[in-house]
Length: 83
Ligand code: FES
Image (cartoon, rainbow, N blue to C red; front, side, top):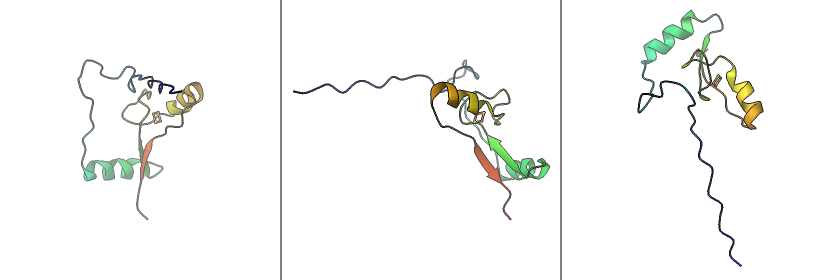
């Protein structure tokens, strides 16, 4: 007996950010990131990967509520100053 594989449910990753644009990309230089890290009191910069941050493209911790609601485990891309 062959049971057909269920089709995966496809939902948009981005619920609301610049939906009028066909592609929302980020482009920055290493210098840009170094400047952000230098200006940060914690010596790091975190970029949102869950698309729920009010401070997009930066992480504001919204991934925690998203993860709890959706049983997911996403988190930011965090770039730290090299020691
Ligand atoms: Fe999106 Fe943290 S708010 S990864």
